[in-house]
Picture 1 (cartoon, helix red, strand yellow):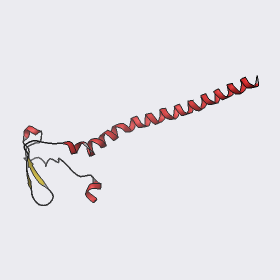
Picture 2 (cartoon, rainbow, N blue to C red):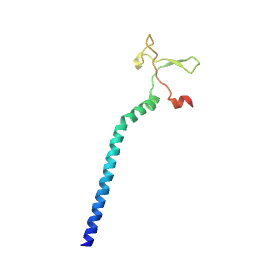
Picture 3 (spheres, helix red, strand yellow):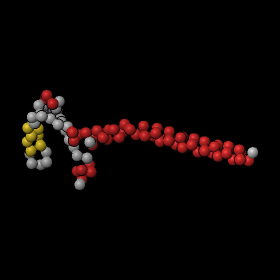
Length: 98
């Protein structure tokens, strides 16, 4: 009977340990699911901008690290006018400082 009791106790302890691990894993997954939209937004902001491309673009540099482009409205870039300038790329703070 003692052996049956120790086997039963082993499996109960194992079950309780696994239940605790499962609870912690579920909490971690919920936390990661909440974090996912922020991470995807950061990806879009930092990585995808490097893959923007336009055909038949004329560029003009004014010598102060800014340049103007003439990509045409067919590329989805608004034409110049009274509206504020259209920002196509701005380096991240870490890129600007270093």
